[in-house]
Image 1 (cartoon, helix red, strand yellow):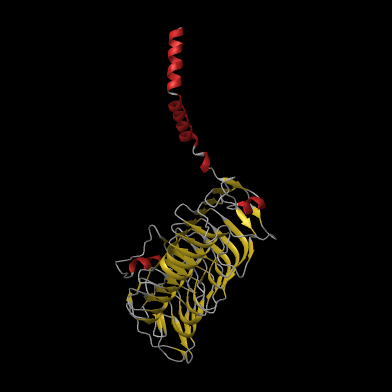
Image 2 (cartoon, rainbow, N blue to C red):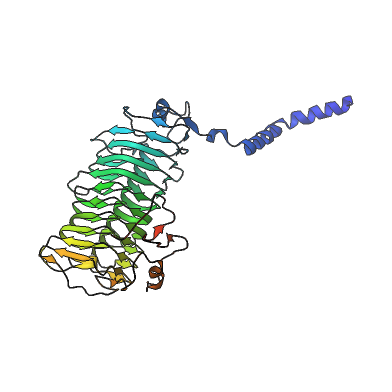
Length: 447
């Protein structure tokens, strides 16, 4: 290179150095990614306890991103929930298919208890995490993964085994879900509430307030001390879909296999089934104890028992503006302890094959012909089969609910036909329909 050309190159380089630096950095970030977004790796007890506790000094903040890279055994070690109501967790935690064993929180006077106290915001995600043998005790808002999730936050692909208990808003995965999403999660163990009122206890979430719960299931027990106890949610003012419950559900009043109280006209329970037994005081139903919203495309095989009144194979009590559509009551028996003979297979004025009492709308519901309905005086035999009535229509003689052709040949409401392409697997052999997206070992049969 000639001297003149060399001097010309140096002059160009000096004048354009800042631009060249920006170009090189931009290229590096586009290839390698933003290093500031790389997750912090968590692989032991000390690191797990450090999550969300630091400031910007070392980056382990409540808004940072974390990845579990090894199983962590927390047995015998106390743990403090990550994030509070005033300072929630807004980052992400990827369990990476690993598990945390023996997570223990014993704070009976503290609210918002769980691995995470509060999770908030559209960027907040906890996923791919297993929590085994948890022992979590709080006061209000307690859950295995979180005490409370809100404002677009997400919990997905997680499971919880062990015990979660507290006074109110108690759930296996989360105590409360306010405008968040719980997706593809399951619980196995026990959920217990102890409040004399407003217990809101659920196998997945205590209360679902304008949130979504989907593709979830519960195999453990749920026991509520007062009102609003459900296998998936104690109280629902949102959407619960594609879920199932195999464990038993017991509460004081307003008790349901999926939801205790389906609270609002826009609330939806759809594509769910229950095989566990459901029992309580007033308002006890195979799917929901109290229904103000919509229940559709659900079935129940577990027994339903009310010690005070309003018991139904699908819903205990329905109110004006509510709907039960395309549901099947397959319980062997529905029982109430009161002496009046008002009884229904689907919904009933005190007891029914479909609903215990009905002020709503019933469309295309069915019930097993041999369902036994019992009150304090003995068996109640006055059944009027009707697809739009409290007792639903009889399953056709010579056909059974385990016959796949029955589900496709009966008259369903055209507004919500059963979907055996994307949502349900057809009945087969002695097995009833199962959910495609919910996972777990599904083997529902007619008792």
